[in-house]
Structure formats: structure tokens, C-alpha cells
Amino acid sequence: MISQPPLGPNTYLRQFFQRHYIPHCIEDPTSRNMEGYERALDLWEELTENPTLNEISCETLSAFKGDLLAYRFRGRSLSVNTVHKHLSHVQWILDQAGPPGRRGKEKTAVGILDRVPFTKLPKRRETYQDEVPADDIVKVFHVAAEHARLPRVPGVAPGHLWQALFGLQLCTSLRIGQCSQIPMNAVKWDRMQIVLPYEICRKSKKDEPKPVHSYVMQLLMRIRGSRELLFPIFEEHSKKTIYDELHRLQDLAGVPHFGFHAVRSSAITSLSEISGEAAQFAAGHASMRTTRIYQKIRLLSQAQEKLTIFDALAQGGEESEAV
Image (tube, rainbow, N blue to C red):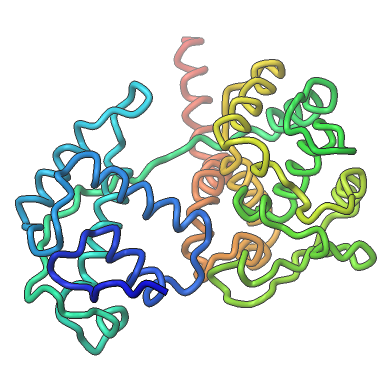
């Protein structure tokens, strides 16, 4: 076995990430988590001269931030939130090369750098997405049954896979990344449950039972098989291919485009009207405050409808027009 030289000031950022950050700072490197770091490092090597740790300065990071803000991907500029994410990943890796400390991830820092370079992150923008009307989801659900062409899974009709996926999201509000990782043996067919392994739950750090509606269980029964994953949608197809198929089905249904997260949001909002605690459990939120974000627009609309002052305003307007 060829021994590697010790980490030092002349180490490159990606090398430091692979040899120190992954084993010491990432407890359970999920594919989604690793994709974020790898993409940030790809951009770092593309937009900088890929300096070694001791060559990285505050000016290097500021220039990288400016290049990210000006970067175009598939003909579009990166959003401020995306720039914030990539820059944060790079900064977190650099922090581990700085002086060690007694708190959190400071404990695993190696002290290669006496002072860690820093640049102010661009301010994140809170995004708002209109709630997807239930009728639009229903239309796509039925269109998928007849017109879905992807994903191709042996022994399973593509439309059945889409309908089972929509149904599961609507009754559990699972993220699409979680759905795509569910093992077939996690479905407890006789108990009407899916027991999510802790590796998929991530935040809770323990297996979580998710009750499944009886109709959704029927949809899952149609796609049951001997394969490893319940929804192997990203095994043979890229994310872009699956999203393109989703948008094609939406065009056929005559509804605006929406993503899988919008279905999750609609599920959380609908569940919160029945039980806030149930919605929080389904969403996997540690705090009810996070869950309330999904319901505040609908709650305000419902409260407005109960105000009587608008009836008086309208009645006064009718009387003045009559005069």
C-alpha cells in the first residue's frame, strides 16, 4: 500500500476534503450531501487557479464569490442562494484547516493554517412558491397512468410508478430524495407502513415508521417486485431526465410546471389543517415553527374569509350605487 504524504500547507482543497473532511466531519455522507460538496469543488477548480491551502486568501474567496455570481449554467445565472451554498461548502472545508477548538467541528480542525481566510456570504433570499392546487396534482396523476414513458423498470408500467410516487408523497410528504432511496423490504405490507431506515431520515438518526393510506398501499402493491429499491427512478435515468418527463406530463395535463417539492409542500399544508402535530411528524421537522411556514398563507386566507367587515363594505358600496 502506497502511503500518502501528510496533509500540509501545500495540500489542495479537494485533497483535504477527501482525506480529512469526509472521514472526520461527515457522519453519514448521503448522495445529496456529497453532490453539494463535489459541485462546489468542481466550480472552485474551474473558476480559480486551484491554489493550495496556504495560497488561499480572503481576496481569493472574494474573487471566487464574484465569479460565481457571474457564472452561467445552462444559459442562466446562478441564484444568490446557490452561490451562498457553494461558497459555504468551500468555507466549511477551509475552517477544518484552521486552528482547532473545543466546540463542534472545531474539535476536528487540524491547524494547518494559523488564520482561516474568509469572505462575507451573499445574503440569502427567502423564496416563495405558490401552492400547487390539488386539482393540478390530480390531473397529472391521471395523465401519468396512460401517457408516462419513463422511468423504465422491468415488470412495472411507468404510469403505475408515477401514481405510486405521487400517492406516497401526498400521504407522507417524503422528499423525492428519500423516496428514491426506500428499500423494498422497508414496506411492511401487512401493517400498512413504511419503516424508513435512519440513513434516509438523516435528521432523526433513527428508523421512522410512516403510516401509508390504504389507497396508496394499493398503488404500491402494483409496483411491488424483487428489486432492491421501491422507486429506482434515478438508477437508470438522470434527475434532469425524470424532471423533463414530469414536465411533459404536466404539459399534457394542461397545468403549470411544478416539482416534487411542491407536492411535498401541498401535503404538509393539507395535513396541518387537520393536525399540526401530524404534519410536523410527516415533514420530519424538529420544530413546529418550520411546519407553520407551509400553512401560514392558507391560514391567513381562511381567516380573511371569516372577517365580516368586507360584507359591510360591499353593502355600503351597493347602497351608494343605488343612490
